[in-house]
Image (cartoon, rainbow, N blue to C red):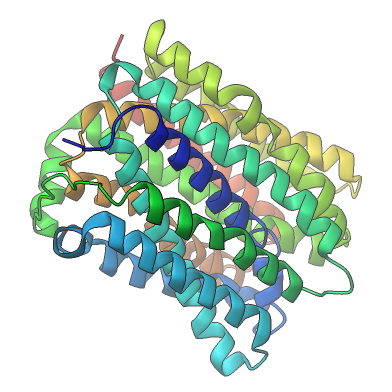
Length: 390
């Protein structure tokens, strides 16, 4: 299918993905606190939800956009728009302009991640999907692990803006990596399937449907952890934001670096995905629910507890990605796009549910963890209904 051959495309995609993830994660765990400077804490999640709603609408038209312009051109344009939005967040101080730019930034982040996935799927083969996806996720998560250290060093006296400047500088080289490497890229035939037809196609296949539900639950977990954990630790427990970003978060993210390549290879060569997917959800349910009853302000205790939750999440992420991409190929853009919608969908549903619990039902921030742990048990059921690949 492709005119580009050999290992170069993979190496460039991996490097571009590393820089993408580093720029994405740099402001990730301060973004909700940053927006909390301009709106009420309880409504921060609704800003994320609005961005996710627009992302979902856009994603349903991505196959048409890619067919018309190609993944190469769309990726380059997305990088330019992302850099501009980051510079806007760094420079502009008026909430009237800042909030729309923040929402736009969330949308472009999702589009860029889809672009990278389209590239990597075009060069993947089913026999190596677990290894390729495991390596891809590990590279992403090494960057996501490094980023909070860097953000913690940059963050002083609530100075968020230099973090957004740095994120723009980190992403900029990706434009040139893509521009020079993928000039000869030939797009697969992108299928445009109406939304409800795509939903019916997914629903009719229990294996793909199970992967969709697992992905949604995992991203729902990420949504609450990214938005509400920093707010809870900072606003309720009084842990300094610099310690949350620079110490707790990097330690918590270590499992994504340690385990995902190994788990991807095991899924390819020995066990398949089902057992590790179910085990991951069990770990997530127990460890996340237990956070509701921890009132200590010891940063190393919180780092350890969040580390345990991410052991489960790293397993679920690797198995979900590996299993799903063994079920599709590069031409199934409508299915891949719908699958990638699980992230913006979770960022739409998650904040709405959390806002209702916090405002209407007056649930404390700590009990969000208990609710989240219970929800993760649903993943065990959907892990049981899929057919293992081994």
